[in-house]
Image (cartoon, rainbow, N blue to C red; front, top):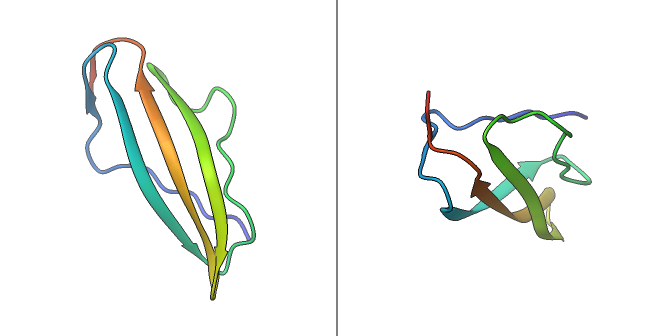
Length: 68
């Protein structure tokens, strides 16, 4: 199973770091594709199996000011 999700609005200031909680029902892992997002660096901080899927904490570092 492959699930792809993107934020509805992408706004950030250079140097800002955001942390998100993500839950993927029916999934076994959460991965960040290489070179998928421009202007940000995304890392999976940790994951855990939960009933019915996986939960993860993601860290998003804004590399340059971006609004799109």
